[in-house]
Image (tube, rainbow, N blue to C red):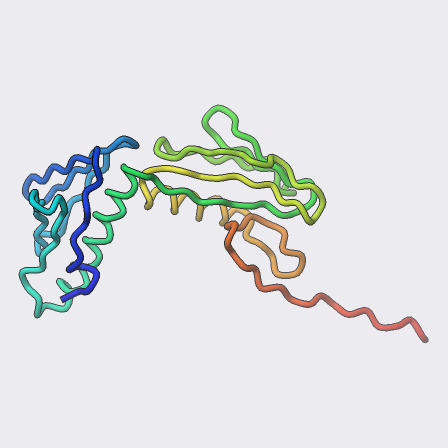
Length: 193
C-alpha cells in the first residue's frame, strides 16, 4: 500500500466532486478541472467524512502501487487548485532585461536581437511586480498564478527555458527560490613581461 495513496483528501467547503465511472470532475471557486483516473484505481467520495478516498484493489501489482500514490496526488492538487490556487514567483537578472504583458502575451527583452513573445494560457494569470531590472542587483519580478498546477508549472518551465541562468554572472530567468551555482571566471595574470 502506498502511504500517500492511503491518506483521504479532505474536501473544503465550496468544492463539488462528481465521479462518473473513471472520470473525476472537481468544481470550485477558482475553476473546474477534470481527470481520467486509471482503470486499476478506484475513487470514491466518503460523504460522512467529507473526503475523497483513493483505493488500490490490486496491492500486489507493482504498477498499481505506483499509480495509487500518483492518482491521489493528482486529485489532491486538483482540489487545492480549485479552492486556493497555486502560484510561482519568478525573477529576471541581467542589465536591461525586462518584460511586459501585451494582448494576452508576455513579451521579454532578454538581450537577444528580437523580443521573445509567449502566449499566456487561459488558466494562468500574470502579475508583474517589477517590470525591468535595475543593474545586476535588483531583478525584474513577476508572479504566475492559476488553478491547474500542471499547466502553471509547464508554463513557468517554458519561460525559464528561454534564457536559463548562466553560472558566471547569474543572468537569465530563474524561479524566486532557485539557487544558481556560480563559477569563478577567468583570473587575469599580472602584466609583467
